[in-house]
Length: 451
Picture 1 (cartoon, one colour):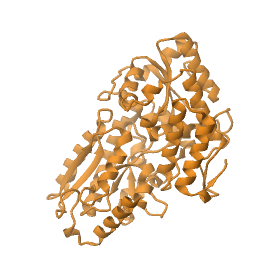
Picture 2: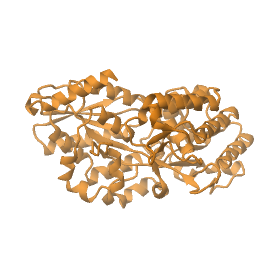
Picture 3: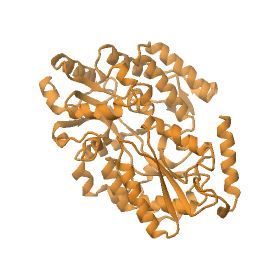
Picture 4: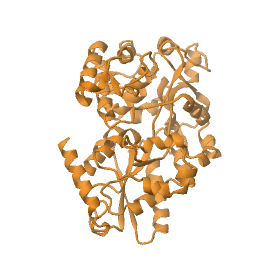
């Protein structure tokens, strides 16, 4: 925490210097170069291709300014830590960074990001085309906007219709309760020994994927409903709903319905082996996000020409089928300007180039993201490349978002610790109690309530 305070101070100090005296990225003293940091890994090659295209367009339109691409080769779970390390010094901090929306508040509070409201007010696309609800992804609790959304998403179930048919399950499957989901997994296990019945993000390496795609999806479908009570202004811990979510994970692990603990703790398995096993017909269904089409389309980590014929989609149900019947969560990635940028004008121009109509459509199609611009929603390339886009888009009508508070990353980490404990044989009640203690310690005892 002390390091963050120092970094925030340095960032603010940097902003008080004349722009020409500051330098973007590692080129201190050279405002003609802006450094763009983003994740590039074998499971996510689309972003590197996209950034190279944007760099060409930006440099052509802005002679004399270089966009220095700095891809970070890491798994999703490691990317955040690596970028935060860069942000701690103005000499290494990026000018433009690819940022998960859940971390915008924390980075803004630490002084790592520059508020960009003045730029956005003058950007006609922001005022006329960006969908108002999606703008919240880049807005912090201080009311200022720090990032521009690139795309959004929803979560649910992907299932293999061939495997379901062999198990005697409907190929238009739509479970109504958690038990329906577990029963489908049990039938697959009973009829096809060589098939892993289900996949869901588990284990500490899954990090935010386990807290959001698994534990929060389950929690929000219980009568507890909330991780954070906005009316009371308090985090809900302990709660019966969170303990039930951990109980669901315990059932899955005890009955060997999903990946093994060893696979869950393998940093590579979920992002490289799992999509491949899915394409080989070795996993019955998965609980995850709508963006997985990019893994199976040409150029993805596990190309699968027949995925559109073989896979079905379904909404994830609430615990006992209670209203509203189904649950989903939305998140998404953003582009933000670093607080230490030596050339924020150029940094914003890069973002405006990256997220104009054509480029927004290109990255949404490539990554199977849902559009955040009105003028991209009807682009026929989206459904042509991924015919499940209309299904995932339809979930937006009842979607929920993670709490946009600076404490959220700490709460998310506490959820991961609790989930990981259960994956490895821990007791759900004890893990839930420890989670409540960790949350209270992180946010303050006066900011929690029992649910």
